[in-house]
Image: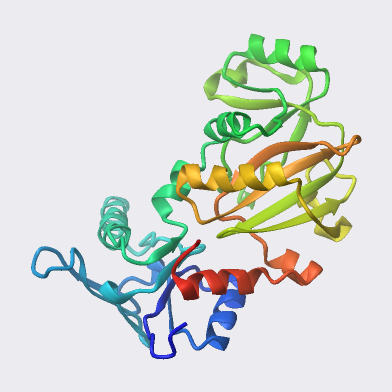
Length: 321
């Protein structure tokens, strides 16, 4: 990095984000200016002013917090971590809905228009990559092995699939905040039998998948062109249920899998992503899904892999190659 290069990295995330803190700490060690903000702070704690058509640059202006100012035309990179959009609870329902839309399309639209800095990752590309059916189809096209999967709202076809594959799991098509009687509910991967599938399936598409006879899982983080693969042993169908039951081993992936994952991210225009695999008894890898903005901080703490440094290197260079 040029010692005189004071272009900042813009970090968009919620107030309590330990993973972002790890990356910002690494950026601070490199002397890279950082402007951290959360869209939910719009108002006194966050101001944006952007101009279009008045200057040679397509977008000029500033994003300001109480302690930092970022020149939108001079950003090095944007790290789009876990931002929270404002809900405006002090307003009536109609006014809150209107205000929230203006922030998304005003602040969000201004940031999305920036094509100079490196995005990790661009939110619109994250969104495009977040559809599981599209993920599955691309994984197969790239030569990765995927479990037989059915997406349907036809109960009869779902029951037929469950009978044909004997051991089947149900997975949500997308994680969504959900509460029952005020208690948050998480959609784990769960086993399902043909007898349990009823006409409620007709309401919306469901994802059913043949269960892999696995002995472990893999979480693979790709940062730019660097690949970090960690084997997770737990004995659980869904290892996210109990982090205290997990043990970790750093592993190397076969070259063709490395190559496929880089091609996968390139297809969606992503710079980083977290992939999940199941490991079967013969050592075969079964591709399960991509989280374009998955968590990884706990893996660095558990394995010593320098993941935060890899993100900091990427954001400092402003170039994922």
